[in-house]
Length: 122
Image (cartoon, rainbow, N blue to C red):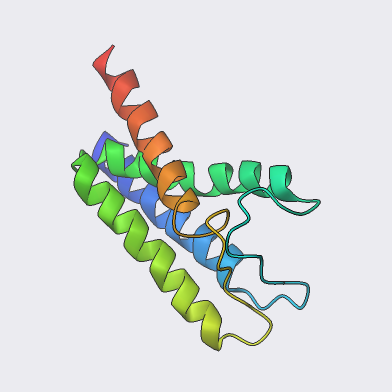
C-alpha cells in the first residue's frame, strides 16, 4: 500500500471514528461550564481520549502533505460541524467549554500533524 492510500484510509477512519463517538446519542452527556478547561472528575481522561481521537486525523493530514494552515482550518470546521450537529441529536449536548471544543480538537489534530511532519524530516 502506498503512502497516499494509507493516508487517505487514516483520514477516512479518523473521520468515521470521530463521527461515531461524538454524534452517537448518549443520555449521560452533560454540558460544561464555558470557562472551565479542566473541570469535572473525567477532565484528564477526556483530555487523553481527545488526543487519541483527533491526533490520527492530523497525522493523516500530514501524510497527505496538506499545508498546516489548511489542516488547522479543516480541524476547526470539523469541530464546528460536530458541535452544530450535536444541537439536533437527541441525547447529545454540545459543550461550550474550550476543554471539549474550540481549542482542543484542533490542538490535538495539530499535534498529530506536526508529529508526523517532523518524523518525516528525519
